[in-house]
Structures are given as structure tokens and as C-alpha cells.
Amino acid sequence: MTVAAVSRCLSLLEILAGASEPVELSDLAGRLDMPASAVHRLLATLAAHGWVVQDAASQKYALSLRMSTLAFRNLDARNVPDVVQAVLDRLAAQTREYCRLAILEGQDLVWVARAQGAVNGLKYDPDMGQEIILHATANGKAWLATLPEEEALSIAYSRGFGGRRRLGPNSARNVDELRVRLSETRERGFATSLEEAEAGTAAIAVPFRASADSDAQVAGTISVAGPLVRITEDRWEELANALHRAAAEISEIWPLRSRQRDASRPRLREMS
Image (tube, rainbow, N blue to C red; front, side, top):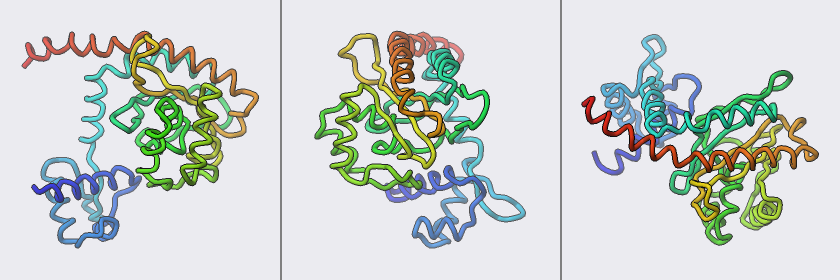
């Protein structure tokens, strides 16, 4: 396959991954700006390899469960959920809100673990497969604020200030607005997102490092999120303090990921 074909194939997978229902061939062709015949060939190839399924009645296409299986297998191999889930569970129980952890992959953040702490009333329960829009999320700004300003703004600018999904009414619209928000994040010691990623929601986030060493690289972020009516300014300090304590715990145990992974490799070789 050519590089262009691989790129088109990945774009097709991303579209299907973001669809809640099976998608028609004509819709896929329109969104990819490709002839239906070319998209059909891609779908046939993906179906032959088990990545895509076609509904017999509607003839529409959807991802198979193979993508999810591989994703969970990868997370399990990294031992990410095991070493942080207990910390997230305690944070969720303490804050009674939705808590998530994202890890840094190059210049992207990716959700890998969550815990629901809301026990009554409105519950915020977003899709874990959503893209983390760096300039509009508390997690994104928590990480960007740890970088030199020029680098942070360059990363955000390269992505654009729109998004593949609809953002909230308060998301930053340009570099100047983001510069102010990152400055506020550094001064406060935590990031906020108030109807920026989504209307009606708010979040607070802090970064955590790859070890307890204060000079260690940032490994990811953790956040508390919920309905705007509950994540109010009078709770910010309380929630930020809880996040900082959880971040310190995660930084302490994060090196276990490498040790667990290294320890598992001989067993995997023996099994093979």
C-alpha cells in the first residue's frame, strides 16, 4: 500500500470510530472526499482483516470489536490501569465527581483510565474515545502550561482553534486568548475548563510526572470534571488540592509501569 492509501485507511477508521451508528458507503465517501468505489475497496480490505463489519440488512459499515480488543490489550501490556486505578477511585470518592487520567503520547494526550464518583443528581459520563482538544480542555492546558510558552502556543496553533467535534462557547479562539489562559494556569497551579470543551460542563486538571523527582518529565494529567453547576469557583481550591495529592501519589508509583512491563517480558517469551 502507498503512504496515501495508508493515510486514507486511517482516516476511514477514525470516522468509523467516532460514529455511534453504522455508516453508509455514500456518507463515508463524502466525508473522505473520495469516489465510492475507492472507499468500498478500502472497506472490503478492512473487512477481510476483521477491522470492519457490514450490517447485512442496511449494508452500512461499522468498526468490529477488534480495535477495542487491541486497545485494551495495549493498555494491559503497559500496566496503566492497574497502577493508577486505585488512586483515581479514591479521588472520585473524595470529590464525588468524574475523574480521568490521560498520558502523554508525543504531542497528544490520550485518555487511559477513569472513575465515576457522582452518586446522585447529574452524572457526567463522556466518551473515553474522544479526542483531547489541547486548547479547550483542562487536561490540555495543564500540560501546555508546563512547556515554554512559545512551544505551547506553537503546538496549539498547529492544531487550529476549531475541533473535530463541537466545542463549548468559551473555548479559546486564538493564540492571544490561549496565552492568557495558560498564564492563569501557571499562576494558580491548576488548569480549568469552563464550558470550553463542552457546553454545560467544567473541569479542573493538573499534570503528573514520571517519578517523584521534581525535574522528571511530565507523563500525563489527571482531572476532575462534572456539570458546571457543581464545579463552581468556590470548590476550585478543594478540588485542586485533591488533584495535587493524587498527582503526587501517581508520580510515586508511575515507575512501576516500567518495572512491571520489564518483569512481564521474560514470561511472555517463555509462553511463546
